[in-house]
Image (cartoon, rainbow, N blue to C red):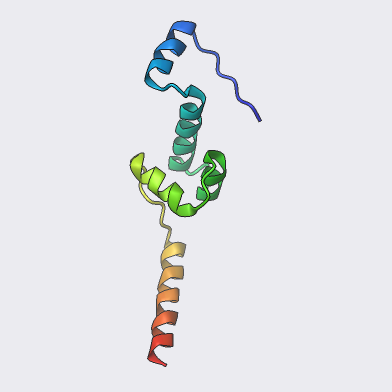
Length: 91
């Protein structure tokens, strides 16, 4: 899908001075705000921005000042994984 934004030419020129790749900058801003508002998932942001890994998304969001979205389900999963690995080491 293509998205078109109509801007007055002077505003467009001013923005292009600051961000030469204005369409990419707009896409990145949309991805950041979508993730921040919990409208977009990490996987959707990865696809939108063409990243190959979750880690790239996490690094990008950290650079953009977006806090890491770590749910209680993520915590419980990580805790269970940790317990499982500790049990394997004891054997």
